[in-house]
Figure 1 (cartoon, rainbow, N blue to C red):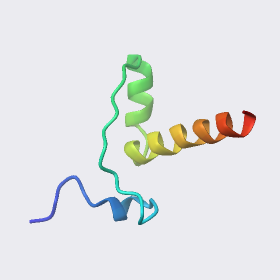
Figure 2: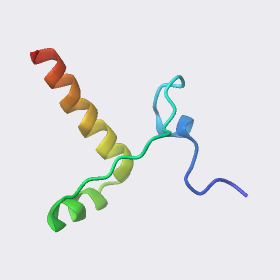
Figure 3: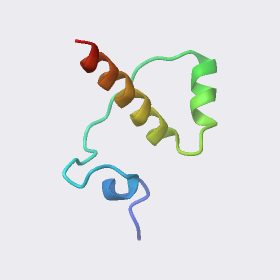
Figure 4: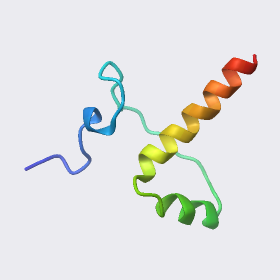
Length: 60
């Protein structure tokens, strides 16, 4: 039976980077609903966080 959580290599991330850690934080109900309505909510969140991290790093 396949792993229901999937494999990191199937998420479009670099092969050298494994998705092994979890991150949780509080959001408003509206934010949660907006994220859940995305085609791929976990990938949407990863990309949004990475974009912000890249922006902050380039402005430093």
